[in-house]
Length: 99
Length: 540
Image 1: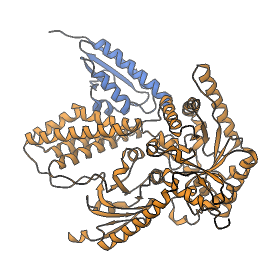
Image 2: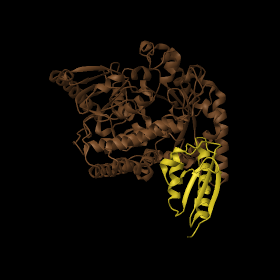
Image 3: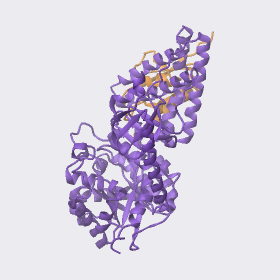
Image 4: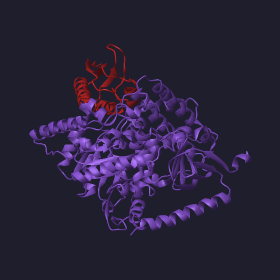
């Protein structure tokens, strides 16, 4: 059996209203482009929720100042975590301009 | 049971006048036929079909609305596609629940979860889930008994309407609307009147007794909704409507012509715009330009203001539509009755007199600068003017001018095309009208709604003091005259925007005190031009 390493990353939410509908859509859409299983949580070490599900990602109700912990297991885990943290940072840079 | 089918009247309040005869369409409430449950295989098929249809409906709707509307619908489309949501429903169905039961139970879990959220922005998600829940449930019922409700000739009934929701609705297929609450009544009134949609609010619990599909008359002039009208009542309203439409046809002949008084003075008529969609059916040649763009309505988005780029595109498109005619864009006027965008501070005892308009903009400068940049960039493409709401102190204009200058210079330094637009002010605070010479604005526009409210100390939405809120109070006309005189002496344009500009009874008094430009809702253009044409007839 081929065991994949688990890859982790984290990113702080910096926009005013948090991980709301629009950023959550972008995040889950991007997550779905990877083969790895990707989970996202608000506390390190927690099981978290499926990052590919918009319902679960929005339900995190992640607010400004909270940290998102992203953990991926699978063939493209490394690049998945890197892309997702970059995306979240970028979204919040754009968003904080607005907020 | 039969008793209910008798004519009965529900009293409301008028948000937008006019008459409508049509069938009741219950916008939010669920249809109530018994849920005829089939076996799991059939229920699963029924659910899949309803989901697909809901998806197709939302996609269709999305192609019709503007960018901001599309984002709201996107979220629901994503929800439909999420197996984490639908998978649970399929599981419930496999365990023996009906499709309706399974879907409703699952969605209600999410709705109550979001309703319990501390954060207001997340609480707002409950509305998205409810919206989707109700759409799919009504589709599920439709696959049992065909449900004839939507389509032209219906009267939209709902508890309340969010501004974004109002913008989503295709008002060409509804004849009018009646709301139980109407917490944003003033807000809705502006939107509804601009489209000529008769609308009532504050009908209360009585709307829950209404029957979907029942015949009804909405009387926006008498502020009542009549369910199961008697034939006699229907005939009476048909007469009123046909009389009105004869008048309308006569009025419409004025639409395409420029406005001249009986003595031959040209009065410039501009339009108020709060939604670019209201322009698609209007020929820009019918007006002299755009006199007021209410950006707090146009940019409304529950998720925060649009970016500089999006705002720039919106403003540039308005200029394109106006085809070299001036476009006056008012900077954000959040606060007062328009605090739904979450920008204004909450908990003020008297929000109309609190931190709103340019006061708020000068506090939230980071946000304000985004709007100024977008405006300066758009100004490079045509005759765009910027107008500041709620100016009270001459310093406020100078402060904005400094900010605007900085943004223009920064943009130009970066090689971005930008230009300093003319900077005007709304005259809606009495001290500004009294001391108008001290305000170094490039143009002035009298905002009569707030000016009357502040000068008479009578608010617009309180019936008991409505008689005091009098646009024709000589003191109000004196305030307007001062502004017009200052404009004439300094060769600066003075216009009047606000409800009284569209009121044929007020127009003679407005022209009497020297106003030469009016800005009105697109639906009022022809009526206003007709009133102008009759001005001075008796004397000349």
